[in-house]
Amino acid sequence: MSLLDRREALGLSALTLAGALSNSATSFAGASLPSGLSGDRFKAALKDLRLIVGDAWVFADPEAILPYEKSYIPDPQGRHIPCGAVCPASTEEVQAILRVAGQYGLPLWPISTGKNMGYGSATPATPGQMILDLKRMNRILHVDPDLATALVEPGVTYQQLSDYLAEHNIPLWIDVPTVGPIVGPVGNTLDRGVGYTPYGDHFMFQCGMEVVLADGQILKTGMGSLPQSTTWQAFKWGYGPYLDGLFTQSNFGVVTKMGLWLMPKPPVYKPFMVRHHKMEDIGPLVEAMRPLRIAQLIPNCVLMMGAAYQLSMFKRRSDVWDGEGPISDEAVAKAAKANELGMWNSYFALYGTEEMVAAIEPVTTAALRASGGDVLTEREMNGNPWFHHHETLMRGGLNLDEIGMVRWKGAGGGLAWFAPVAPAKGEETKAQTDLAKQILGKYGFDYTAAWVIGWRELHHICALLYDRSDPEEHARADQCYNELVVSFAKKGWGSYRTGVSSMDLVAKQFGETNRNVNQALKRALDPKGIIAPGKSGIM
Image (tube, rainbow, N blue to C red; front, side):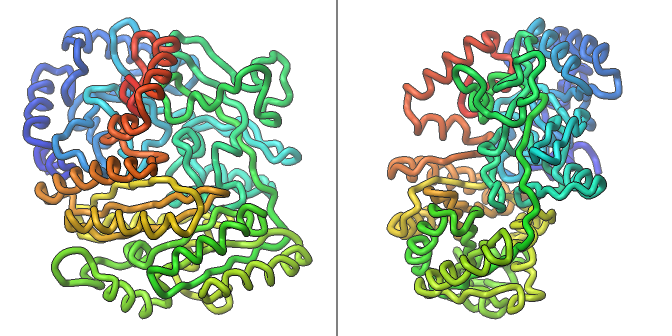
């Protein structure tokens, strides 16, 4: 396949491609350079970067940077294209790279594994940034079996950490997002991702960071700044203002180490599925789940999965619907029934001793049956692939089943997550579901969605699934996503996380004061704007 074919397969515009080939002809980049940086200065920066990490770990020609350009989210103009990538192996090399970047005015976009699927993968928020790929920094620095803590570098994957615990016979569980084997705890936590065990709020169970600031200084948050600290991974707060949150969903520094709390393996783990058969059941379901979550009778993040979302994991759209426009509820219900699914399929688990589980199970199951649901266990659902998928996640297990979603509409898979947050009240679900279906339907897209109850909040996880290889549909997906962001924000439902193409738009919904404070912090910590300009709408 030629470079032209490969870039077109990635959905890049002709204009971007022409710029890439033009830059390649002058031997200084595979895509357009950031504003204000000449080709000569970029070549000089590349030379200095190679002195730091070696020739093999600096990428700036069109073929070499192709992996960093791949994305599933809408980008019809091909804006989110890097100028290259550099891969350090140590904190000291990160410091040196930041000095070079500051000297030449080269913006850096840090990634841990770059598998940020549905949010932009490795691509930067603004064109022409140099990817700071931390995958070589992949050491598990310490695991304390007694305190159930770990200290890891950004390139460590959940699979690597799971294998380490198994190899050393350490009875601790990790908590993973849906595509855990190929992603890492540092990157997922910094974007405030979630998982499915009682430790599912990843930032809540993070403890201590090492951060390289734009000027090269190293900050150790929490108790880490004490020279002889033994509590860096044990006590979150340290002394004075709590700083760790500043480095999540931000561009204020480069995190090079992170502490994690791990979950002790419980004596008993019992997973459940609750099946509701009508779309309108989501309201009563949330009302039943909320008190159980707040009281921690159900201790893990509860997934309430729509049937279309579930079907998209293992089926193709053509298996379910061959009509015009968005898939109908009737077609979804028919396919769901054929696969032992309801219109809403909720997954939770109980953890503890046999006595604890035996005491709590009747309380939880009675409340959920009263909401109209069928409460099912592993015995009834044995062999069902959807149950197996979620049963695996709720014990920190690893699989890649949800990657199948990108093939829902064919080989040109496009996926953008839209994730507004609301209070965990049933009345919120109907209004949000109606609005999402109305906007998605306007643009011809299906309502493939799930709800998650954290403790007191609802995450409405909408998967915008489209054919990225179709230019017209690609453009429609971009317009649809933007309308979702603005329309939901007007109702008070802001996104908790978003992709690189919509970061500025989402930031605007939170108001000028919020943006001004973030920008003041940016100017104080990174006055040259070197680290990830545009991340979360912060320049």
